[in-house]
Length: 126
Image 1 (tube, one colour):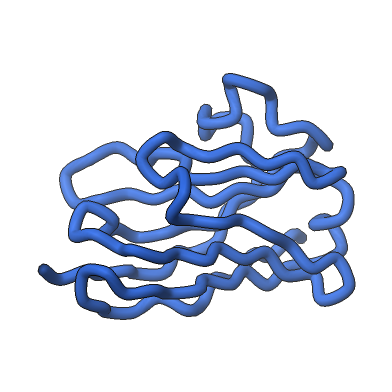
Image 2: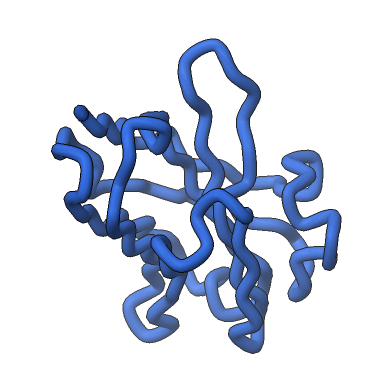
């Protein structure tokens, strides 16, 4: 059974930074991993994805502010978030597909992801 365990969420003021972590198994070195988020009253949306060989993709709303990375030796996925704004407030989820690639323009389709973490809350105050 694949487990994804997020940590690092919290409450920060606008302009602040947080780093989320997602601890998992060696699947991180064999498939596309991504971060999604769900704000209150909104649908879950893709934030950033990283493919097997390191190709990165981001939602337009976080480009230049968020950075996705992974450590294959530590089996950990990261999301470094800077210049946070109140609109970034959401529950953040780590997800994994069963494929090496994230699917090009379809990477934000959550149906492509088979495994999910329980989520970690990020709250940004103005």
